[in-house]
Structures are given as structure tokens and as C-alpha cells.
Length: 179
Image (cartoon, rainbow, N blue to C red; front, side, top):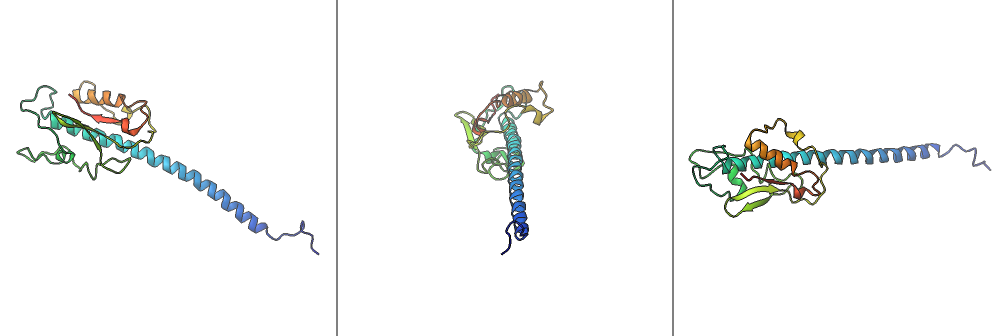
């Protein structure tokens, strides 16, 4: 009879099993890092797209860019798609380059934006419908330098992004334009 303590059979099997366990742990760690990287990218894209839509709404509501009283009454913005091509303008006026329902949709959920409306002005802003907690809690302005604090539009954006700090859900990040 063989002594089981002196037998060398099965060592390779145990070594291969340990190698599979270690590789599994490493892949789980890599997947967590990759998930975090992708969430951070979607969050940055949310801020970029929201800023683009707010600036387009600002150009719609204040076409002169003066921040004062408009020479013509402001037409209410009824649909986000109107920012793509202004049907009420004599010239082909575009406020956004990409369709906010497809190319510029909410990057966190992949769905349409929730719109924020004013009875007189129509759509004045958008926000995500996601209830997830954001990764970024501070440092929003670092993403959009240089913003000119002397410009009325940039001053509004600075205040809007400062209001995002310490929010607990993406839904609370409201990209709203008000003159």
C-alpha cells in the first residue's frame, strides 16, 4: 500500500485550481474598476450634454445674447427637437448640432431627458431621471474652464454648477436656464 503523504499525484490539479481562483479575484477587481471608470465617463458626459442644452435654451430665449429685454416676444420652446432646427426662424437657425432625443439623450439612463417647464417660456431646462447617487460631489467648474465670470451666460453656468454640489441623486442635477 502507498503512503498518501508521499504521493505526488494531484499537485498540478491543486495548483491549477489556485490559479483559477486568483485569476477570478483579479478579474472581479478589474471589472469593479472598469465599472467605476464607465460611470465616471457617463457622469462627465451628462454634465457636458446638460451644459450644451442649457446654452442652446439660452440662445433660444435670448437670441441677441444681451441678457436684456428681447426686441421680439419670446416664443415658448415646446419640444427639445426644436433646438436642432428652429422652424420659426426665416433662416435655418440651429441651437444644437445633435438631436437631444437620440444623440444627446441622457447618458446615465440612455433615455430621453426629463424636461423642466415654465408656463410662459415652455421648456427652460432638463434633468436626468436617474435615482443613482453621483460620484462627483464637488469640483464641477474644473471640467469647464475657462468660463468667463464677466459674461452673463457664463456667470449663470457657474452658479448652476455650484448648485450641483452635495446633491444625492443625478435627478437633482437640474440644467435650467433663467435670465
